[in-house]
Image 1: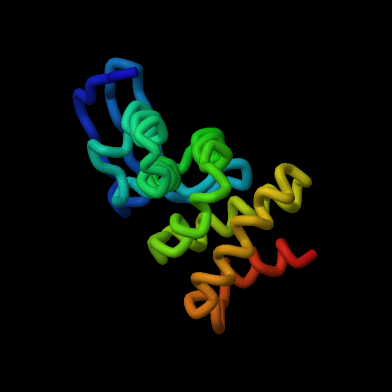
Image 2: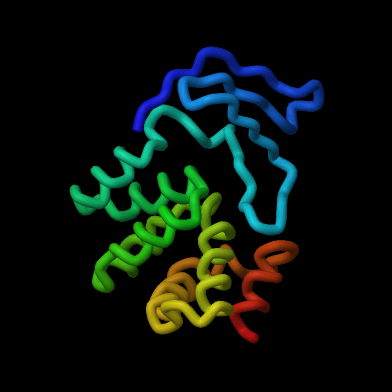
Length: 153
């Protein structure tokens, strides 16, 4: 799907913006709602498209596809990429997983486990994360701590 952007206007405090496009008027906010994740336009560029994510999955560039999906921050897309990754690739992906997206990914894993979806699959990922990223998780606080506590319950 392609759309053309005709105009972008930001709110005075920079927390919201409106886009006039061929798809209509789209409003974005970084104010978190309970049913949505945070949209962060700072990590969006021309490479973060559904077509590019699909191409990366087909090319078996799983780490790139997963990071792009996390940047796009659409739950269905993240889950589709996450579930398409072969089990024997998990260790390598986690070993090279960028620290900046680790917390968001752990939040998704926590939700998967909490809702009883793909618990065994999530445990393979958690095992690899603990093996390769334990140093990054040491002394965790805030949001990461709450994700880890959700997983342990």
